[in-house]
Amino acid sequence: MKNLFVSLLPVALLATGAVHAADFPAKDKPITFVVPFTAGGPTDRVARDLAEAMRKPLGGVNIVVDNAGGAGGSIGANKVAKAPADGYTLLVHHIGMATMPTLVRNLPFKVDSDFEYLGMINDVPMTVLGRSTLEANNFKDLSAWVNQNKSKVNLGNAGIGSASHLCGLMLQKAMKVEMTAVPYKGTAPAMADLLGGQIDLLCDQTTNTTSQIEAKKVKAYAVTTPKRLSTPALKDLPTAGEAGLKDFEVTIWHGLYAPKGTPPDVQKKLNDALRTALKDPEFIKKQEGLGAVIVADKRVEPGEHKKFVAGEIAKWSPIIKAAGVYAD
Ligand code: ASP
Image 1 (spheres, rainbow, N blue to C red):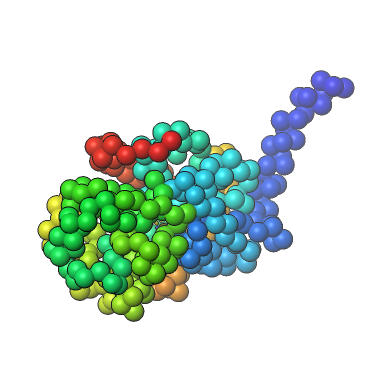
Image 2 (tube, rainbow, N blue to C red; image 1 turned 90 degrees about the vertical axis):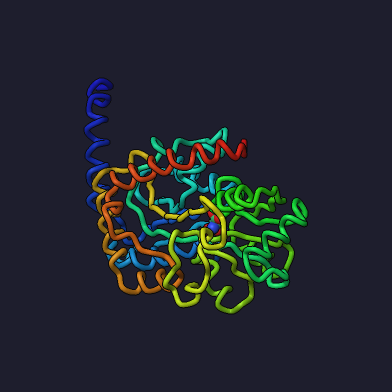
């Protein structure tokens, strides 16, 4: 009897898995998007807009956002890596998936083998900002001011491994100055402190900075893309290259991930819903109004998403190693 039970067990488990996938998502069970940063910041923004756009193609299921900020985005990513692989706990993360493996020495998960890649969402430029009370009105004057004040300059970021940290590293390298990094659990609180004048500089995605630039509540010095942006509030911003900074180009991207082992049918349903969301005019309008570009190329395919992230790891690893900054 015992033997019969043991031999039937895998069949029973398989059957449960199959039924589960066919029923996914259950109407009464919400899907959670884990955002590895605080609420109100750029990663949170894309996750909430995406949640709204994916709700309908997933049959009206509730999608909630869980802000699990800290340690540059690795706490939230680890939470999803260890979550049940049933499609109900997903991760919305950015370029940190490509920088963390080099920047964080004891990363408690593996970016390439602990996740299923569900497709990419958007590409977002960054902007270099200063508090509104800074005298410098252009990059040249900012450089002079930074060079005078060096380590007295407070540069906010969302922790080692975050996009703002990476951008800040590049800024310091380009300006040949070491500033004082001030870490937060996301760039929403960093922005609040920039507005309040508690920090001097912040590099952040346009999805968090456009409205502040438009309202002239911060000084904007440059955009980190090779070309100027077309978004009305950002079109007058020089590129870092125009501002005289060499090799200062970084575009942030966001992707959707599930824990490793999520059933293939569930992954397919999530990828289908993501593709539908990426064509949703409301979603596109909201994101593009903030300078983001919705992914409309092959990176919406999980395999291409994974390939792209591997390419980004290879691209950023030597730059980070040369900067010599690590976290444990
Ligand atoms: N933009 C942030 C970063 O620097 C994170 C956030 O979304 O709050 O990585």
